[in-house]
Amino acid sequence: MGRPRKLIIKKVIKDEDVCRLRGQWVDDSYVKLPVIRENTDVYYKDENGDLKLLLKFRKNCIKKSLIRLGWNSYKDLAKPSRGRGASAGPIDPESVYWKKRNLAETSKWSTSYLKSDGEVSKMKVNNQVASNPIGYWSAQKNFCELPCRLTHFTRVNYDKYNEGLPFIQRIDELFKNLIPDAHEKQLERADCKPHLKIPGTSFSTITINRNFRTALHQDAGDFKEGFGNLTVIERGKYHGGNTCFPQFGVAVDARSGDFLAMDVHQWHSNTPIYETKEDKEYNDTLDWAFKDNPQVGTIGLDKKYSRLTFVCYLREKILNCPDDIPPEYLTSSGHSKIVLKS
Image 1 (cartoon, rainbow, N blue to C red):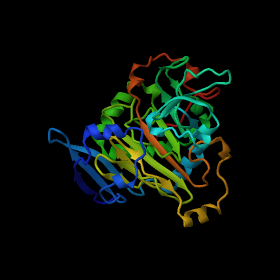
Image 2 (tube, rainbow, N blue to C red):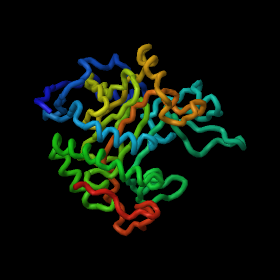
Image 3 (cartoon, rainbow, N blue to C red):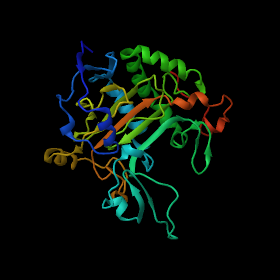
Image 4 (cartoon, rainbow, N blue to C red):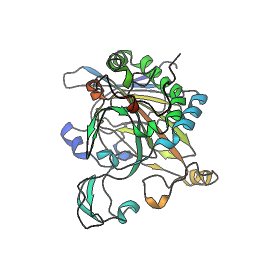
């Protein structure tokens, strides 16, 4: 990969100020340094003066055959979700999605709504975005109790999930090569529950996003001693969508085939994703790759370009899962084997 550039940077926004931006959009005005587009390691000093890793970025380190495999296997698995919290951004009552609904008790990035019987919904929801986890999930309680399990869209798309594993395994290999200490800790933790680990990796879960510009947030629920691992597969042309750490004034332009390891417990977001005139002219020549109904109003799905992001991690509470999970929660009907890394 060649010798990476090394940056040591400082915070440009105080902790108490950056947290007030939670759930808000971040634009390019927060980027104080040249956008990172080449192999770079970025560090900062914490309050004790210790040097801490913020991110490592590598260009063109996933070969095209694996990118094609990842696209063919996972492009349809970023399903609409209303549960992405602050990362989905502030509620806009004038947007296509919310204009069709009667909102109630709206606050920042969440809202209730009036049901057909006129009652206010018990559930508060977020902007609808294309974002969905695959792999394994820890137990949760909402309106029903769900056990530790293979996620629903993984089970119903089991063959596609299985076929794409070499793409995910390459992401884990890059993680291991770039941040071996964090990878070793995460793998040791993941191996405590091998039946809930994506084979050949230190991951339990991958969140797949499509054309999802995240608002400012910190990731929650992942293994705190691990690291976030992000890669992108794109189709068509677009600008922006840079992964931004506004507290440090730094952003990364991760594109197809690149790899970004980052401290997801720091505040981060995306800059606007947009088409230039030239981008749109090119994208208009493309066939539609998806069968979306843009009238539904799911953010970003009215575009012909596609920006798929894959965020790979280990869920913290997987360790609390039992060892005797019923098989029907771990495989799809008729499947008993998945591809192991050779």
